[in-house]
Length: 199
Ligand SMILES: O=C(O)CCC(=O)C(=O)O
Figure 1 (cartoon, rainbow, N blue to C red):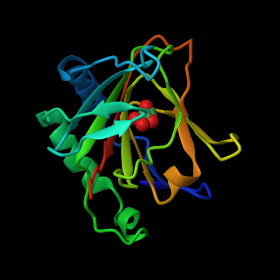
Figure 2: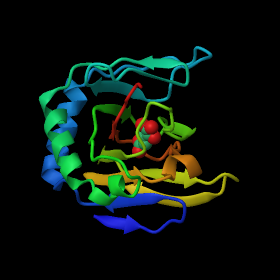
Figure 3: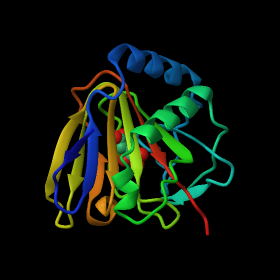
Figure 4: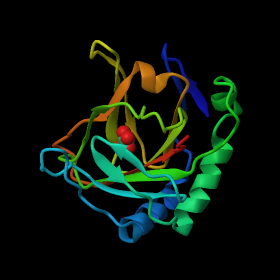
């Protein structure tokens, strides 16, 4: 796991977290097994990606006025969660003086092609823990962080099987996005493992 040096963030990155054959098998399984849904955003238009949310009981949350209620875990996501937890550096929690709790939910995003995207946002809802682990499968798509002024601070094509962990104050200082890339014709799946706690 490599530490990406970007002031104001704490980012850990492994571009080869899953071997390519395993990543392909997982991609194919999730493509057919996940309960993909295209939701409606606040003004009625469709969100430009499909989503499926899995998690423990009680990990409901609301984002951008959309309610996310967890589906029961499927075995492939349970075992991947355990591996992602094992790979998450102890420092990601220790630096925040938090216990090493791990993740209790995963948001799966399916970008069918380069017309699908996720707009600039931070995953900073009060109930969301500050350590978020993101697995990318399928087509390489650009992932960008922008600082307060909107300038791009980090841009990386996240490869098939890669793991990016966002920790520290990353969500406070930066927003992130996966912009549209009309030239991309192949699908991509992204899995963000999170921790949701309602106090
Ligand atoms: O697809 C990605 O790499 C990012 C997904 C994301 O930002 C999210 O689920 O909040």
